[in-house]
Image (cartoon, rainbow, N blue to C red; front, top):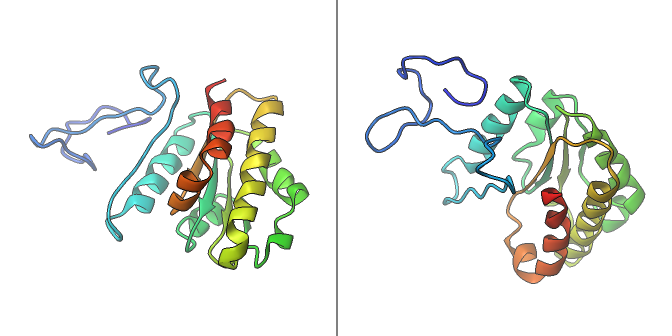
Length: 178
């Protein structure tokens, strides 16, 4: 009983409030102008499963949205491939060139698409450089794209980047509000 579902009696609601009522939410609601979502929880509670289900349901119900997963430990690989997207798994920063990332992102011009980049195979010394390339290309893509639908960027297990590269993250995500 959320995005795109017909109203039902609430008995089959996947999420419930503390009072047992069906929980309804719509990420396209104008009350959320920046469309930012933050999902927190301990390891294994289902954060990736939740985000996968919500975004897949949005796309299936016709919501005009595309998704880029910046992944860690292949949490979103199966979903991206099942939806016909490309899932990059670079083994070194040389495998993640600006050109390759730009090509991956260009597909997100079409609503209903999902793409992914796995970072766990990269040596630690190369992860930040690769993320810098990725976020710089995300910023470029968002500035020049011709479509107007939402593009979600899901960053899984990227706390160190959020902490150590706040300016780069802010620049890339500022483009979402335009």
